[in-house]
Image 1 (tube, rainbow, N blue to C red):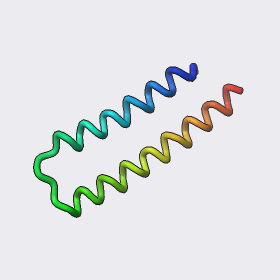
Image 2 (image 1 turned 60 degrees about the vertical axis):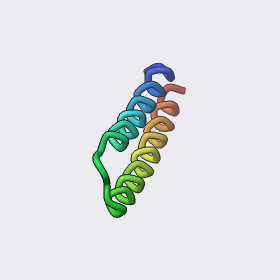
Image 3 (image 1 turned 90 degrees about the vertical axis):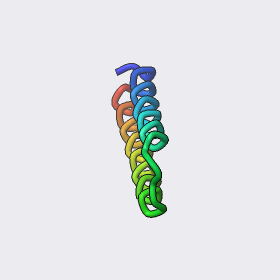
Image 4 (image 1 turned 30 degrees about the vertical axis):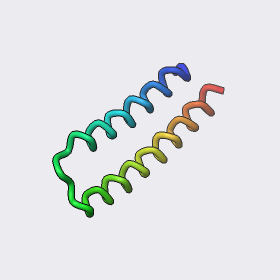
Length: 58
């Protein structure tokens, strides 16, 4: 896979998650905390996947 493709897919996933958060109607504090935690986890997973793919390409 090309680096641009992987970077584009990762960026699209993060933008989609952000758009979903913005469109959600009046979230409670607990829901916002859960979403923050899951977003952080998703970003960590995406970074790990990116590193793995980049190592495979090299």
